[in-house]
Length: 171
Length: 285
Image (cartoon, rainbow over all chains, first blue to last red; front, side, top):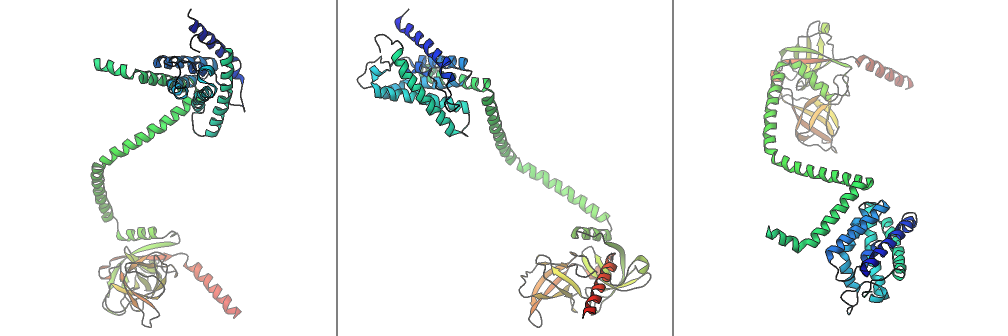
């Protein structure tokens, strides 16, 4: 089995377990939960086929929805993140970076990677919490939940980045 | 077909994105009860507003035919109304008129009568009607017709009564301007049988030509709101302190035939009460 695919599968299982066992049980202020699964979408390297990014985003969202009983919310949010990922990566990656750049501290630098992670997670959480609320009557609560979820998710992303195996030759 | 394939290849990213988002959103409203109910409520509101908008547009274009239909219906109803009117007796019409104008006519009753003799060219014109004491017609009873006030019964015998009409110089009927409630006394001056004068209207009263004059219900002779006529001219009184309004009378005395005499059942009670008060006041003095 290709080393990169093996690493991706290990990452998927680890993140999925982390999400289900830990993150789904965290409820900051009673309603804000961090969602770390978009980390997998975030980690696609530059130059990935955009269609495959969409489909992967959709599948990752579907897996999250199945295990979290949030049918549709994760799928829609993750697919949107899959659509925006190339633009965000282009926005925050350094000018003189490699073509197949995989987003990480090492490849992008600490600041750029944090900006990238925060913007990706914030977009995902805002869409997710909007679909959860499905109205604009409680915008403040919705934004607060998204911000708190994003903060924790970014923290876990940093931890995961340190702990999880990296793709060979790219990271 | 080739064009379609080219189109798909060109926009496949966006097509896949839209398709995946649609699948996600359909799942969202299908598998989540709250989101589903919000969606269907909103969809109902939107579709309701849309149907209302389209129906208002289509009904606008149907206005012409609708107008024609209403015109036709109005014509039929007018014909029917005329038929009904001609089928009713005039004194019944009078009662209907009074019933409409008065909120409480429970203490009043009406006796239909015919004018059997009348004078029109004297200063003190009188009418004779074919109802008298035996029919319940008493002195000082009001007489009206379908168009308004006629006069007051002056004398009554067993079967006849003499009425002092509005066109008698001695006739005095208390009345008011319907919209302002300013009141005065209606008096006739020898001359035109269709014009009488409403005197003692204060100068600060806002009076316009065309205002309706009606009874004010102050006396026990006529109930309130029985029409008398319309203001035709506004003139100053002889002393210049008030207005004297020339009123075009609704009643055409020259062809008056059917009238109704008003029987006021509450008159006795009212008179007794007023007399009692008068006596008390006199005793105190």
